Length: 330
Image (tube, rainbow, N blue to C red; front, side, top):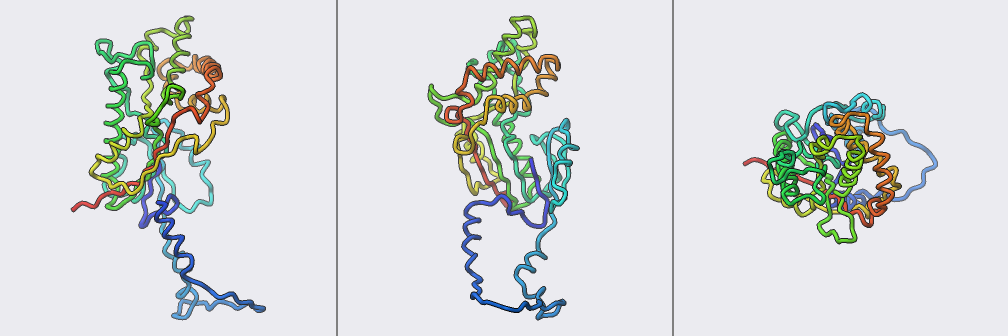
């Protein structure tokens, strides 16, 4: 998650209506076409007739604010690698801020702009009901909600709603009045036909690999029963309902795009590598590192067998883009 503290706002990510208004200003300063055979020096100095005092561009350059960008991730993130990969001639100052974005990270009213990219599908924790053997939501034999009882799906949905509301409340405390927040939220399409693939199927395949390894004595069944992935592709309509209910922000713009309109999944191998990068730390922490290679080799084979899961026409992931503005307090 990227956050900016500045005396002004960056226009790198811009509301399309604002961009359109800026585009319409291009014809305001029209200079007749002239051919010069000589070059003329611009008047120097700081006087009233100098270039510095009369150039629109020069004036804009002098007003460009200094930007301080905070990069946030979990405390286990390798921030050294992050900073090594930042361009050395960047036009901003950079800081790493470790910690969970589900809670407060900054003092009140210190941020002007927040951007969260593809991270709000992660839950702060596994819903406690699904690991309780006494609960009707106990998710034994599975690691996610696909093909699970309704109680499991309800527990995931409740946790998702709680976490997104907590995130919005925390950012509302940290943003200045009228500060902006851009969210890019992966979600499940609202309409998923029988011939389509629910994106949460991704985790069902990982779970089936673990169950196969259990049958072969490579992993204990108890370990699998106590492991669940704290991640949810929530239906778009549910995400929108949470955002619209929030009283701290006004929704300036919201748009949904299907994954097929954004990019095509290059290959099964890249698909598997992407989810391995996301899940490997969780799996190592719960099962130990010894099973990771074997698990994802098996996962790779299952993905090849179930080819529709890497078909962006079939895999019903949607991306919800939202521009929020912090409401001013009366």
